[in-house]
Image 1 (tube, rainbow, N blue to C red):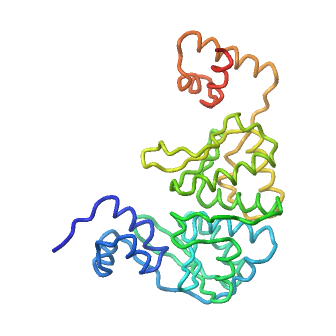
Image 2 (image 1 turned 120 degrees about the vertical axis):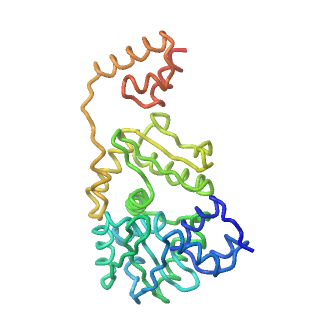
Image 3 (image 1 turned 135 degrees about the vertical axis):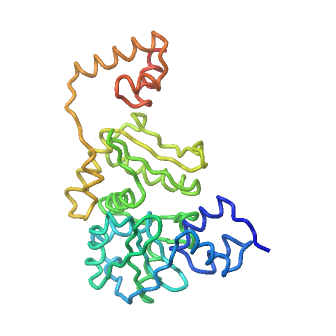
Length: 305
């Protein structure tokens, strides 16, 4: 008897079919046989790329800034098959040049492509020696989407910052209104919170300014959310991306643009916000009207009261 697939199950399948092993996929979808899963994947336009090349991934274990960048990128948007010792990065084909940089960095990487609803490009590398060491050093857990690392022992501050920039490039969003935002499975909330508290400390930023540091689980799908428009944090991370000689995604980071603001402009902004508050406007309406963050409007509101 055919079992009707639920939307949630289809979403799980789409998220793990390219990344996880047969055994791990079966454990996430226990109602179905492997044949039924493959049939459903085919009907959804999902097709596994079976070409995996051998490679030497030792360079990712070296104390180089670019290695830490790619580890952060892989932590966010890559995967490691623990049983087969295969490391995979699979991203949108529009970023194929970025993946080619990774392939060049590991010397003998080959960039392939797969087609489904969207064009994707990928690198799959088998390394029975280096992959277990990468797993151990950076605490990569099986089914990484739902299992963040329990610890991340990167003591050097620049190496840690580079790792975070790689993570943002892999799974973060930088909006045109100067906001860095990461939304992921709720199991990552505490982990990301700890990482970004360290970034805020290093950037000497005021945590209360335009920043959400406590992961929210109030989004429609119950995910964790970390978001900031803090000037110090954004300028700090962008300047590090530019100075540390790493292959950061320029199409993302170029969206961060700062306008010079003098003291008088800040005074006028607060004055206008207070006028709107006294007229009965809500923080959401004020943020849109004055092009400021809702958090900043809230701070002004609390100061007024």
